[in-house]
Amino acid sequence: MFDDVERDIGSIRLPRWGRVVSAEGVVPWLVVDDGGVPVEPIRRYLSDVVAGDTSTGSVRGYAYALMRWWRWLRAVDVAWDKATPAEVRDLVLWLGQAREHNQRRPRSTSVATAGTVDPVTRKRYLGERYEPRTIRRSNAVVGAF
Image (cartoon, rainbow, N blue to C red; front, side, top):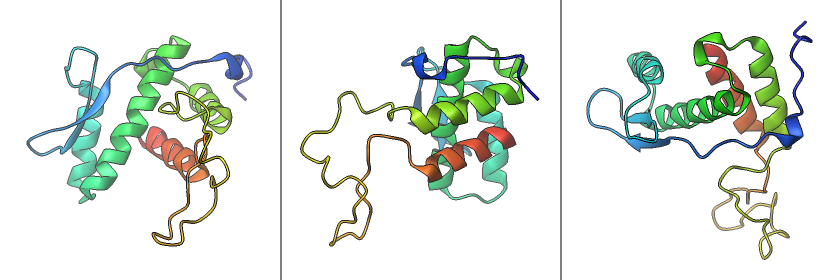
């Protein structure tokens, strides 16, 4: 279906570009570029999300998913308004095999606990890879964007 685009998914590294920041006003979280300027298409989308009575935490999660999408588009050299389903597909494939961006080095002391449940908090210890729910959310947010 989108076979005209082939990428070596394993060799792609996302650039350290932009960040998610808390903001005053209607939209509580924004994605800003390296100069601190809000990314306007993302700001407009997040404004629509807020209008749908979405929680602040969800808006933050959407912002992170869209920042990752913007980084992905920079890595594959595609403008945001020229992206196709092939870019979405490849991002999902990349997320399935990539280390989380904030994982600078492999875990050492917590490697034995990754994937197990903390008996006190009842939360799962995270591994080095993106969790399936993160990938699903990313796919949903990018698809809606």
